[in-house]
Length: 419
Ligand SMILES: *Cc1c(COP(=O)(O)O)cnc(C)c1O
Image 1 (spheres, helix red, strand yellow):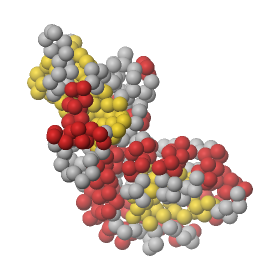
Image 2 (cartoon, helix red, strand yellow):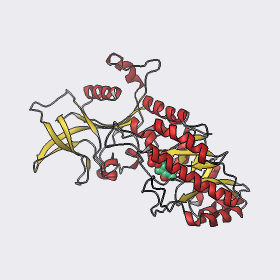
Image 3 (tube, rainbow, N blue to C red):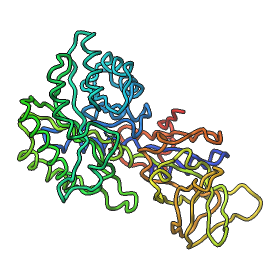
Image 4 (tube, protein in one colour):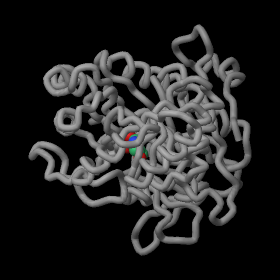
């Protein structure tokens, strides 16, 4: 965080344009993800679901750390292959075209998630033409009700995967097709779960379902993909998903419930990249309308759509900036609740709502935390044709553990922008 603030202050010393940037702490990213990979039980693998943030630099940084990637389009597979020619890649997502399936096979994906009966047939048809057998996982859409202790969100109707009731028929179909081999099942039935114990219980339920089908149909399972969905607590930054508790419960649960010889895959997005990313936007104006305080920042939901898509007030800090270039008084607001909005001509362009601030001035920078996943990647960048934010990837200078002000010029050389 200090590194981020230092970068902002140093930028404000040198640049006249209002600041607007995505800033990534690559060292934090490496440490955070390495620790997750290292602490998983031996029968587990951690993949990164690149749709959360598919910036070239992020994918490159993660390639030597994660066990593989999950891709939801041919475009994503190409991005992954550009960074990591040999790493395992899983290809999932509804509505795959023939071109995508062919491209995925050509780019050596290790598994394809089949999302429907028709997709099983099409993968088999394409593989047969190539004289290959392609390993697939059947994506299961659980009906529920899930065990009491697990989350209500799973088990409601969605367009994803194959209805659990149709799984037996699809297994029988696949068993009669020589060019596909069902190597396991894929479950991704929830998003942003913050409860570690419930997450383990849900995976336990996946294990039971997979083991049941394996037994009934004599399948030789190699994989159980437990999906992503580990959450980030945007409302209380201090209370994040308890990874240590998750690991403590996961190992013994898998020993009890996971069929022998099965590797459990996790394909997390949000949980891996959210915390390394920041969206920094300078306050352009402050006003009080109908007794409410508004801060208008450079940028908005066209660049950082997450708060609008989740309908939440995104956490931020105000970074005080000393610089003031005008010959008249600087406006400020003190000890009040403020709504932070962007530059779009829509009242929905709200980044944070009624958030308490001790002081905020025009020219200060609002720094949104946990912006590294589903931020820039899901935003409609060109609505209103404003310039794009800078994308800054902060690299820690080699051989140095603590960043301090005197080292700024050294680190500045290591800052690289990729836009
Ligand atoms: C989006 C997605 C993920 C990643 O989800 P997170 O909530 O970001 O962890 C994993 N698997 C599938 C199939 C997805 O669609």
